[in-house]
Amino acid sequence: MTRQADRRMPSPARRAGILVAGPAFGLAAVLTAVLAVSGCAASTPAASRSSAGSAPASAQALHGDLTVYAAASLTASFNDLAARFAAAHPGVTVKPIDYDGSQILATQIVQGAPADVFASADQQTMDTVRTAGLTTSTPVTFATNRLEIAVQPGNPKKITTLEQLAAPGVQTVTCAPAVPCGAAAHTLLSADGVKLTPVSEEQNVTAVITKVASGAADAGLVYVTDVKAAKGSVAGVSIPDAGKAINSYPITVVKNAPDRAVAKAFVDYVLSPAGRKVLRSYGFGAP
Image 1 (tube, helix red, strand yellow):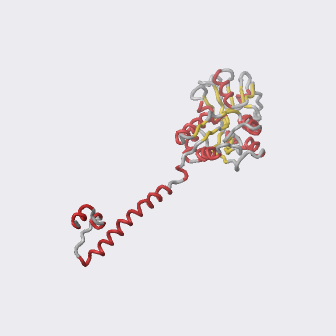
Image 2: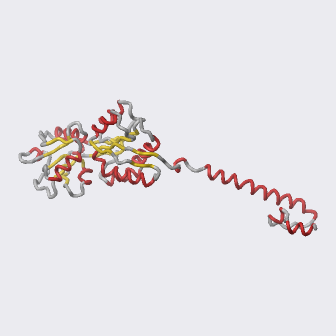
Image 3: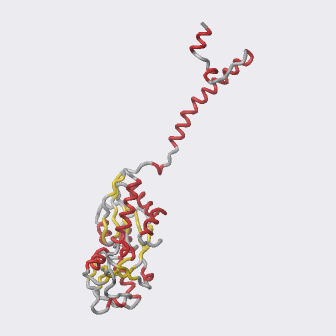
């Protein structure tokens, strides 16, 4: 019976693959095998718990909605950034970005518009939101931009200088003075002593580009990024003194953002090396 029982129920030592050599070593060998088997059984769940508990917080999936208000000059670059962010975070619904003149967006946010993130084309406009107590922390500059003259393809008026924008017969459009691109244009024209009376003053830089591209204007003062984003519908004329009016772009999480973790993740992405690489590809300068 004993031998049959041994065959039916192998000892711990046999299960562990240990051969019991003789009476002198039998008890020690069995105890060693039992301890080894028990130790393995106990350590396996512990290792599993350790492995499961060590997942970094950054690997946790984000869930929620994201509403971004951004300056019109950021349209192409932020559409790209938002698409990349959404692809990396399937649990986040990125709503269509609201683009307009920074001052219009700032006013809307102060009046209660449901923005999670605000990206402005200048610090002065961002200060409007910050002064109202609607930023969660100090806004961070993520890019810079400078002006360029937008003309129709082929530059039929042969415009090469700022002075020519004020010449008789040249119809020039600019952004309104309250808009960051309009304030920059005023600074640049004043620095070069050019007195310009534009045929219209637009509420955002996209409208300036549209008028030049459609032939409603001969030239316009816009950002270099806008000419690049226009993809041939307008041509650009560099301004040697453009460095006199550099625009800095700050970004912030809006205080009342319902999904603040999602909003912060997007801001962090814009500020990351990967985000700044995307911005450079659209012509933006470093902060």
